[in-house]
Image 1 (cartoon, helix red, strand yellow):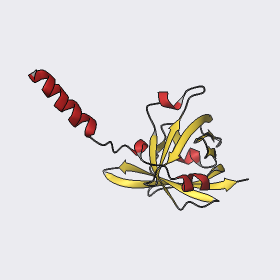
Image 2 (cartoon, rainbow, N blue to C red):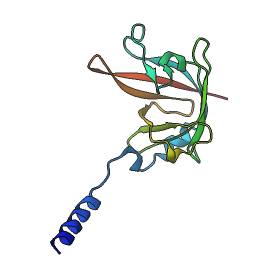
Image 3 (cartoon, rainbow, N blue to C red):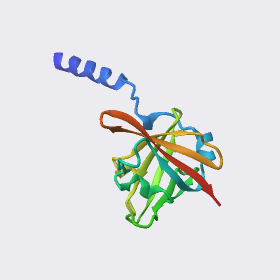
Image 4 (cartoon, helix red, strand yellow):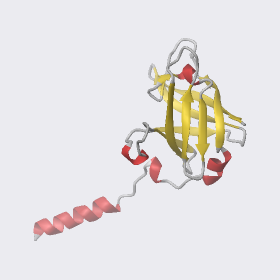
Length: 158
């Protein structure tokens, strides 16, 4: 009987804890609708970019993302991205994404035919300066013990 009471108390305590995961917050549908469509990364900037290489999204050097094309579909939070810069690895993939109420852009890069719920790894970036024609994704990275912003500038294409 003591074990049953103890297990019940543990279960109540465990289940009553509220998750603070970025994936459990409400969506910012207004921002999502604002950034729907086709975009190109027009620049990638961060302090020391001429000396320091950043491996973006575990795919390629961040400068390889300049000129990359992105498609964002807001009604189902899916899309596509492709790296196309000369001298960089060619890559294209379906993506899933959403913007939460905290202004965070949550991204998963999928393998062909893979469902998003099977992908455990994703990326959380801050979104800023969102308009119908452009926005920025900001990644925070550690460079020599100092947190640095990597800013991806997205510009809408027709």
